[in-house]
View 1 (cartoon, rainbow, N blue to C red):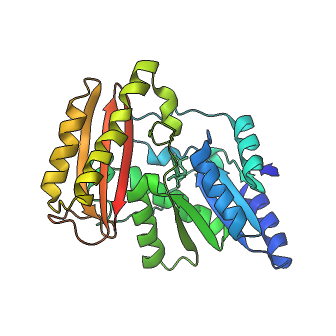
View 2 (cartoon, rainbow, N blue to C red; view 1 turned 90 degrees about the vertical axis):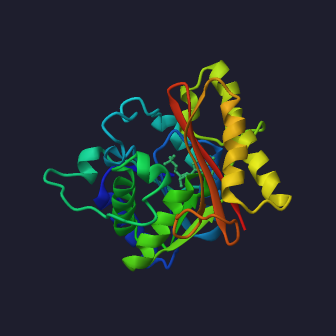
Length: 280
Ligand code: AMP
């Protein structure tokens, strides 16, 4: 397992692998890796001859009042996690490597980014799509792996890959959770012990929503109500959004029929957490 910091080094290594006829998987991350990230790396390692993991806290996907500075970073720990999960190369660029002076070109998407996180984090998806597009052009992977934890991100990446003809297969991976149900996230490290306990309300409220659908409820408004009611019972929780949308276009639905995404964002104290499930 090696770590490189420049685009040129990644390109040279991938070109060498290509000359040997090897396939390449890419797992884009912001680092501070946990078992959620490792599940993506393991899947890529199983499906490709070589796996590149990018570790880059992408400044352009953070809004001015978000947690760019505070975002946890520990590259030594990440090296361990990547090597344990079967990754071959870490790409860990400095921001200036990815964004030279006068960087002025972006991948911008509409429709899938109108609601949910797109509505409350206006520059977020432009930053995500731009960095992911750059990583696709740098690594030229056969497949790229994304977690359903960030379901709107997944739908948006699928969209721009289709719209802009990126020659890469997008592979979606299920949400990895702690034993008590909390979705694993690098941001969980912000939570105090009391907040960590309070954060269980996210997965608990979603479970109630899912159970209602399983029992035949098809009204999105009713499912939203069930989830909101449970979230409101937790004094440390402040709802950012609770939405029921179709999983392809990320537009609101009234009835739960096709592949449906039920997604929530909730502040626990100052920490904003997201969680979701997809009903099919
Ligand atoms: P991040 O480092 O948060 O940008 O996440 C990098 C990738 O890991 C994204 O595709 C995420 O969706 C995925 N990921 C993060 N947390 C989880 C999780 N708990 N389960 C599955 N995938 C995850």
